[in-house]
Image 1 (cartoon, rainbow, N blue to C red):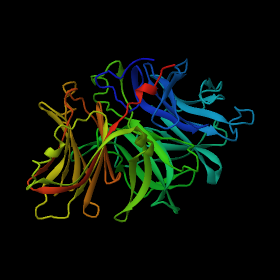
Image 2 (cartoon, one colour; image 1 turned 135 degrees about the vertical axis):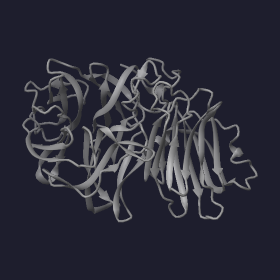
Image 3 (cartoon, rainbow, N blue to C red; image 1 turned 90 degrees about the vertical axis):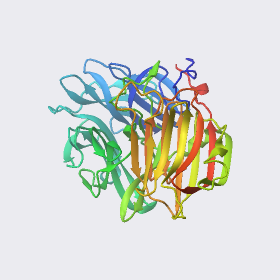
Image 4 (cartoon, rainbow, N blue to C red; image 1 turned 180 degrees about the vertical axis):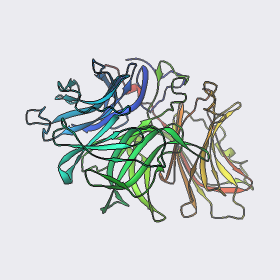
Length: 488
C-alpha cells in the first residue's frame, strides 16, 4: 500500500490514482456486482482500472489497456455482451471495450474483451474495426438499443457527433450525423442515454451530452460541457432543446455514465474529470495529478414548460458521514444577535458535507447576497453565495489559496437558480482541494478545484445589506476512503 493521506491536497473521498496523471473517465460499466472505472492514465495514455462495490471505495487494479503498434489508448466505453453477439465468449457473456487508437496521423476504433470480470484483456486481432480519414474521430460511446435489437455508437467527429450501428460489435455502419451551431469547437467524449421525465415511464427522452474544446462564454464563466434533450430512433438523434449547460463550474469535463446498472436499481450515474485543460498540468499536486468528480445520479425534470437535467450526489456517499453538527432557525444579517453567523465560530472543515436551507420569504429585509465562506484562513476563503436580484448561485475562488500556477484559475462561476417555494437549499461537498455545490436538489451544479492553505479550515455564514433566515444547517465530517485503497 502506498500511503497518500498525508499529501497536502490529496482528496479524502474523491477518486485519484495512487500516483501519476489521470484525465477522462472511460468504460464505466457494472458487471458481476462491481462498478468498473477505467480512466486515461500516464503518458503515453493507457487505460487505468479500478473496481468498487459501492462507487466510493475503490480497489486499484493493473493497467487494463496499454499502447501498441496501432497507437495510444484514448477514450472509449465498455459494454456487457450478454448474448455473445461478438462471438468472444463461447456463448456466454463478458465485457467488451470499444476505444480509440490514436497516433499523430490518425484515430481509429478498436476492440478488446475480457472473460474474467475485467481482470485481463485481449485485444481483438481484427483491430481497428472502424477507420476514417477525419482528423477528429474518437471517444466511442456504445450502448444496446433494444427497440432495433442492435448496438449503437455515438462518436465524436469534429464539430459534430456521428452515429453507427452494429449487430456484432465488429462491423459498424454509419447512419447519421448531428451538430449544432450553438456549440463551437471540437466535440469530445459524447454520452447518450434515455431517461423518464418526472419519473414517468411513459415520457422517455434521450440525453446527448458532449464536451467541447472551445468553451461557450457566459456571464460568470465559460461552459465546456453541454447536453441536448431529444429523440433517438436507433439511427438518428433529433434535439428538442439545447445546447444546455451541464455544469457551471470550471472543473467537470468529459463526464460519462455507467452502463448495465441493474434494472432493479434503475439509476443513471456518471462522473467527470475534475480539472481543466488550461491548468491541468500545472496544479500543485504530487505524486498524483488529476482527480474525478463525485458520482452523480441523473434525472430529467420539467421546469417552466422545459425539460432539464438534474444531478444529485449518489446516496452511497452517506456512508462516509461521521460526526454531525446541526443548527436551526438562525437569523443572519440585521438583528443577528450571534454576530452574522458567529455561531459557527470554532467550527473547522476539511473533508465534509454541508446541507444548508435558507428561507427567503421576507422580501423587504432580505439580504442582497447571502451564503457561506469555507476554508477560511488568513487572506483566503472560498465563497458560495446567492445574489437575490439576479437569482444566481456562485462559487468565488478568487481568494481560495494557491492560484499563481495559472492566471485563469482565480475566477468566479455563476449558475442561474430560482427559489423553490421561498427556500434555497445548498448541498456542498468540501474536500482537500475541491468543492462541489448542488443547488435546490441538483437543479444547478458547480464543481471547482481550490488549493487552500492547510490551516484555512474555518467556516462562516454571511448576509449582505439585509438579513436572511437559516432554516437549518447540517455539517457532516466525512471519513477518508484511503484506508481501504490499495495498489495491486
